[in-house]
Length: 114
Length: 111
Image 1 (cartoon, rainbow over the protein chains, first blue to last red):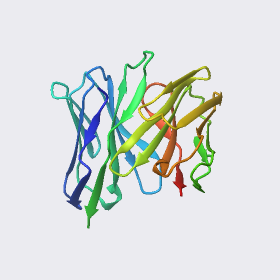
Image 2: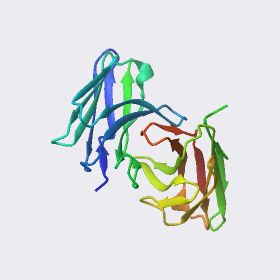
Image 3: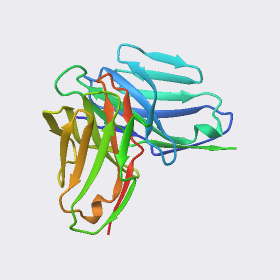
Image 4: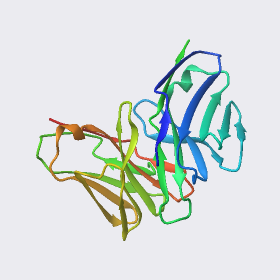
């Protein structure tokens, strides 16, 4: 299967940490991604993790991958109002193979309250 | 100039009309994609292309067709538009590493 699922909405206060979760079903995924979509714009790559990693940290962002449970999370430390956006989890299927596709989750709307 | 350009940005059309959405990219990538975005459904893959001669259906290709006129151009057509095709459409391109570059989107309304 190729389903990627996320919760639809998350509300946090400015300065708190945000955790956005994602579950995927295809164990052949070799890369997993987080994209950010700001209002009125297309998606932009935020960060990614290789499937042989458990964690990746990039400034305020921490990505955790649990391959056994097919669970990916994005933690944003010290969340700011500028982080308000829709966040998409994505997986690439059969990287380098003939069926190389980028599949996106349903998106999580993060609302940051001042 | 944007890496991925979509035209038009907004379009209102009537049921039954044929409409084409255009996409061009300056990244030099082989892979191009068309997605539609609906609230609560995320991005759904319509069609994707790995090069000019390779076109593949995505999850929701019914009612749509595509043409890869050149490496840099990938257009999406609705042969006979219907109201449930009202959505935000995105074109994207990638080099296969998974980092995709998206256009600004085309907001299509079918009345």
